[in-house]
Figure 1 (cartoon, one colour):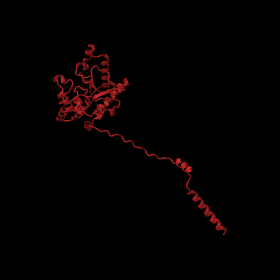
Figure 2 (cartoon, rainbow, N blue to C red):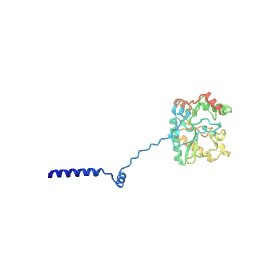
Figure 3 (cartoon, helix red, strand yellow):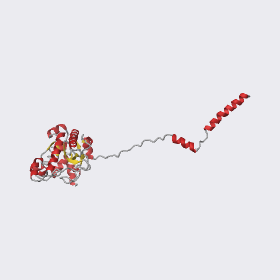
Figure 4 (cartoon, helix red, strand yellow):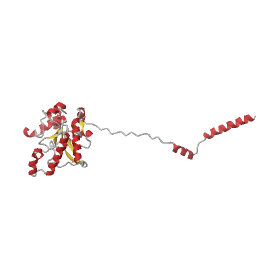
Length: 270
């Protein structure tokens, strides 16, 4: 009988503990328990905006050319032929706002800009034009109304192909890296006149038609571009080639762009 009571008391004690553990905790205890449980917050995924690429830009990418700012991020770009601020007076590139060049030419441009910024960290290159499809070159050639002897000083005959058409030439200036303001070069981009001629700088300076500051700025631009492996031409202070046409033909495919018929149709619609 004594053993029975011991067994009964033991079972009751165990059941009591079990029932106590199943009792609803008071609100204060529950609050403490919840505060002790770490909260797991799922990482939020930021969705990048979809950047639409225009037809011309996709054409250039497919041709193997590269966006120069992907190679030289500090280089500024203001495509003049995507505006009306050019000697043609109208937009010829449409929605294209980025500058494309052959990959090795873009690397040369990076070297030139690095040289410039070592000379003056407040300055950077500002690119006005890079690759130019031959269809655009043809439209320029057909529209520019002047004798061929003068025309070839500003626009290469599209039959031969400009180095721009290969993505092997660049038009540019120097600008303040913070404001984007271009330095004085004595004559604006695409200026048709001898003030734009590097070979006439001494004469123009003596005649007071350009300033010493403008000449110095041009010389800095030429030194920087030479450091990258470019050379200038004698009728446009802004134009620099990375090689000669014969070499470009060996290295690259010419970028055709639209057909002549499509180009002239686009011109007629302006």
